[in-house]
Amino acid sequence: MTTLLRNIGELVTNDPTWGDQFGVINNAAIEFGNGVVTWVGPDADAAARARGAADLIDIAGRAVIPGFVDSHTHLAFAGDRSHEFAARMAGTPYTAGGIATTVDATRSASDDDLRQLIRGRIDEMRSQGTTTVEIKTGYGLTVEHEERLARIAREFTEHVTFLGAHVVPAEYEGRADEYVDLVCGPMLDAVAPYVTGIDVFCEDGAFTVDQSRRILAEGSRRGLRTHIHAAQLGPSPSVPMAIDSRVTSVDHGTFLSNDDVVALADSDTVVTLLPGSDFSTRQPYPDARRLIDAGVTVALATNCNPGSSYTTSMAFCIANAVREMGMTPSEALWSATQGGARSLGVPTLGTLAVGSPAHLVELDAPNHIHLAYRPGVNLVRTVWR
Ligand code: NIG
Picture (spheres, rainbow, N blue to C red):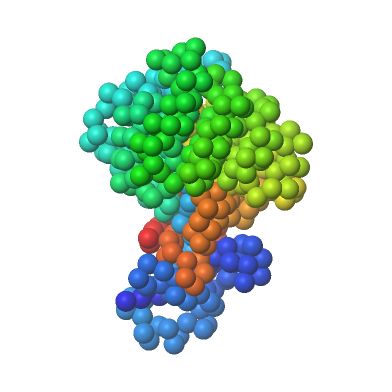
């Protein structure tokens, strides 16, 4: 059974076959069935397909884009930190220390409470056009609780990332290296059946460069995609180590140096920018223009979490990236779809070409520029996944 969308005003495919990396086709049609895209082309060529389609939908000149790939989230949490946000807006700086508040609330929540919270956040994301979501652990920080978060997160997505190295928990205060032993050994053994990636928060108040290197090396040894929270709160010596460790992505990158940018451009590492955090912590925004001009692959994600970025909206991130980070609307959409897919190591996501997953979004707008042009408005009309 196939579905054929006709009379699409603007179809963004991210398939270079159609001219450039954005692969925009005006007056387009697209067909899909059994979960994959089966045909893409100009609407004028779709008449023959229309005769065989089980379901024919007239898009009436609106835009269709690939579903958003939100490649960096911390959705598995309980509790509320809105007062911390309010204090920040009154001048208190963001620090890694707030994570402990969420650890307490998350450990106290039942499995079903956590399922309900994650379900609600994913529904909110889906209604705003997100069709792929990565979920990190990181608010458990014991073998038992990290295993529980990974197991529950796996019920919602196949892209689960182990972040046992989020902060050193209170029980290990002054014994960070012993905690790293736990992360690299029994904790990683416990989460292994559920996770496809590993991450570490390398920052003052979290983990050092040497500790992060160990954790990433152990993740690589076990065949996991590797990520690092780096240069989030200040300049950091972590980026050369991360590149040397061949990480899949460096995330945040708010305070990258020129040398970092040159080294990243010379690597396969994706830089995942998270403008929701810079917005919610009143930090400067990273310079995406500098990264793109240097040739770095940039992804955009929400970083949905209760401390530094409690948004589920990829369109909000796109609007900020365009307004504050020097990206064009086309670049921002590419980074929120194909960029995210690359940072998850699954480039067939975030593209609309024959054989790619049928994850599509119809916008209530004539083109994708409206995602940044109409900030704060949910333009998503239909989501197919
Ligand atoms: O990506 N940096 C570490 N983790 C999250 C924040 C977590 C929190 O404050 O609860 C982040 O910003």
